[in-house]
Length: 209
Image (cartoon, rainbow, N blue to C red; front, top):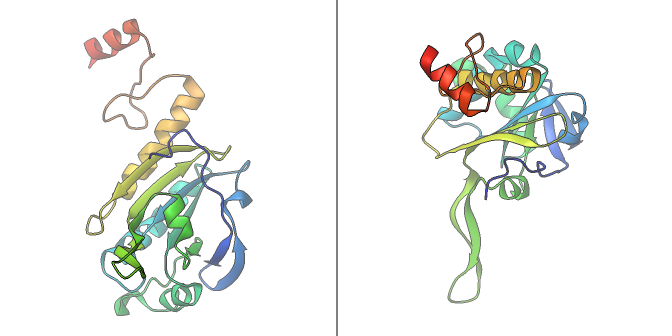
């Protein structure tokens, strides 16, 4: 079930912040009321598509920050594994230089509550608890406003990397809606015309475009 329009699930979990420091009680609530949050899940540390996404978010970090958005990553790895990966150079497959928080969801409860866990627990015929599927997170992305409400979500399957520029476009669209009271049509980008959410507004927009 989609989380859009609902309160983002709250949690406290270990995380690595500033690329080098482990904190045991990280929470998105630390930003609610002050910043919006782009919260994304990735499957696993020391893999292949994941570092390209994590580093791409880092490359665009200033673009998010100047829009008042905090980027936060999360996977089902431990905080120690996060730290080891952050201390590994890019030429060796690492993500050295990443400064935004990476949450350690080793219990898989955060991924489960956000609906991105790529499997689930079940019982086999002998009554033993088993995990069916992959015990990692899909590539879920959640844009959370200052009140803690999810305004956008996407969930990619494991092989499909994200477009980080699209995440920035979503932020710009939300800010435009909030500032101007207009809605953003298909393929809208910052600087382009939007439209009023009325029959007349749609007709005017379509005739001009």
